[in-house]
Length: 179
Ligand SMILES: [Zn+2]
Image (tube, rainbow, N blue to C red; front, side):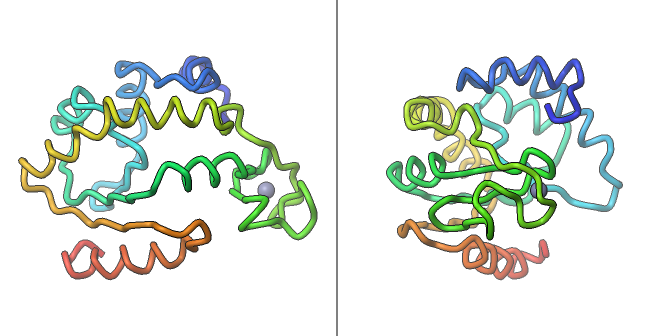
């Protein structure tokens, strides 16, 4: 989207309406991206696959070593996403309640302007959560049946710091010899 490619513009049309990007487009994005990763390096897919169909295609092109599952109550998701701000220039993520920039609406790292994503408003967020429940949550059972290991982080407080969750995840990844 940022590079304003033809594929990126297609994706943008869906994202701005709070709709999921159709499978064939996502798979195209993913294939192009995975091809750029050096052979012996691993990768993390953030928020993908989102449905069983995608999971099955993914299994044909990559091996999944572990599932990183973050359990977050709806009210925390709504609160945190609707206060999220992103740098237009470098993509750094801020939050006007928990991770404020030093100067309002200005990126600490590059001085770029901060903006709110058009799908980060409570109505669209609720729609995204509903789509997750219907289409994505069945994946948990799918991967359990496939015996893929899970690392589960339960987030119960609004102000939980990303570093805290990250440290726990890395500890578990090391235990599984994946980090
Ligand atoms: Zn920036």
